[in-house]
Length: 596
View 1 (cartoon, one colour):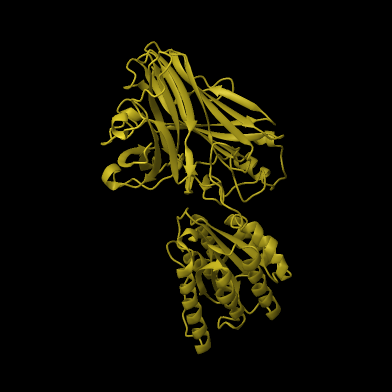
View 2: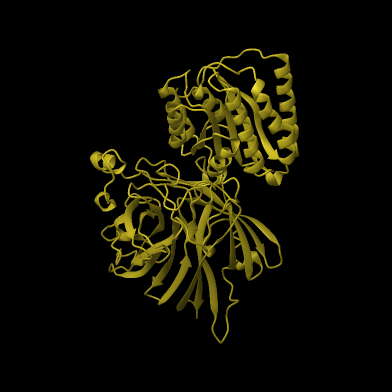
C-alpha cells in the first residue's frame, strides 16, 4: 500500500441520491463562504459510518443518532471545526465534504446528511475498513500537517471482510504518519470486531469505546475530541508545564581556561511523586573547520516528589549531569569569542520534558524552572524564566502522542507563539543616566526555533528568517531589519548587520521601542532551506556604567503572541528485549527501578 490507497470502484447512484449529494455539496459551499476569516477552521473531523450488511437497522440508527448528538453536544458550533462524512461497506465514498460546523450548517447540512445514511446506495455488502480510513485520511488533506488537529471517528462492528489485517494495519500506519488520530466506536461488534477497532484506535493514538445507546457516543467522542471543546493554549514563561526550554545557556573561559561566566539551571517538580526528565543540550553555534557545532547530547535525570534541584552548566554539579563542555571539550573547551577577544565560549539551548520509564513523553504539568547567568569577571548576573508548554488531552502521567514526537499543535502540547514581542531601549541610548553616572544600554537578544530534530539521523537544523517590525515612541513603524536564525542565534542589537538596523538610536529616533518578531521563510535572504518557524528566546539588557568600566544585567523572556505549531523529534531509548517484554505485561509487571 505504500504510496497508494486501496482499489476504488465506482458505480452510478440513483437519481434521488445524486440529487441529495448535489444539494449537500452546494449547501456546504455556501456555508463555507459564510464563515468569518477569524474563525477559519484549523481542526477537522471525519465521521466514517459502517453501512455493511452486518449492521442491523437498529444499529444503523444508533450510529446516526450518536453522531448527530456529537455534533450538537461535543463540537463547538462557531466555525472553528470542520466535519466531513464518509460511508463504507464494500468500498467507501465521501458523502459530505469538510464543512464548518455552525448552528446553521448543523441544522441544514450535517444532520440531514447523517439522516440520509440509512437509505444510502452503499447499504449492505461487505465491510472495508481499509478503504474507509483511506478515504477519510485523504479528505483530511494528506500527510505531514502539524498545523491542524485531524481526527477520524470510525463507527462500525469492526470486522473487515474485504481487506486483510495487514492492509488495515498499513492504513493505520499511514494515518499515524499523517498525524491523524482515529477514534473507534464499536456498535454491535463481536469480540473479534471490537479487538480490531481497538487496535486501530490504539495504533493511531486515539480512543476506543463501545456504544449500546446513542448517549454512549458523548463520553467517547468527548475524550477523543476534548481538545476541540477547549481553547488551545500557548507556551509561555509564567506557568508550569511538561516541556521546558532554557533558551540561553552560556559558559565562558578566559585564556587560562578558568570559568569567567556560568549559567545555573534550576528545575522543580511540584508534585508528590517522582518523575524522569529527558534533557537535551544543544550547541547553538554552527560547525567550523576546527570546532563542532549544532551537536547535542542527552541525559535523563530523576526528580523525587516535590524536589527542587539545580546544576552548573560548566560542571554539571550538583545534580550530576554532563558538563556543558562535553559538547566541545577541546582542549581548550569552547571556541574563541570574536565579540570578547581573549575568551572562549560555548553556548546554546537546553530542552527538558517529562518521560516515563520507557522514555516516552508524558503529561506532567508540574515542572518549572529558571536560569541564572553569572559573570564572575565583572560581578554581574541576570535571571530569566524558562519557556514552558503544558501537555494536553490525556490524564496526568499518561503518554502524550507517539513516543519520540512532541507535537506542539494544541492537541498533544500547547502551541508555540506565532510571533514574539520585544520591548527594548535603543542601542546607544543613555536614557538611564543619572546621579552623575553615564549609563549606556544595549540588548543581547537570543532567538531560536521551537522545532528541533534531536534524532541521530537528524534532518538538520531549522532555518528561518527573523523579521522585525519596529515601532518607536512616536508610533512610527520601521521595517526591513532582519536576521537569519539557523538553529540558534545570539547577538547584541547594536551588532545586527541588517541595513537598516532600526535598533540603533540614530535610526529609531527615540530612546524606547517595540519590535514584533516573526519567523518566516525567505529564499532571497536565508536560502531555499528556510521555512516558516515559531521562535522563542530571551533578551538580556546590558547597562554599561562609566564608559563600560562596570556592567549590570537584567534578563527577561520575550512575550508570545498568536499560535503556531512546532514539533520536537528525538530517538526513544529502548531497553533489552526481555526487560521490555516483561515491562509491558508479557511476563508480568516488574518494579520501575529494575527498568531504570
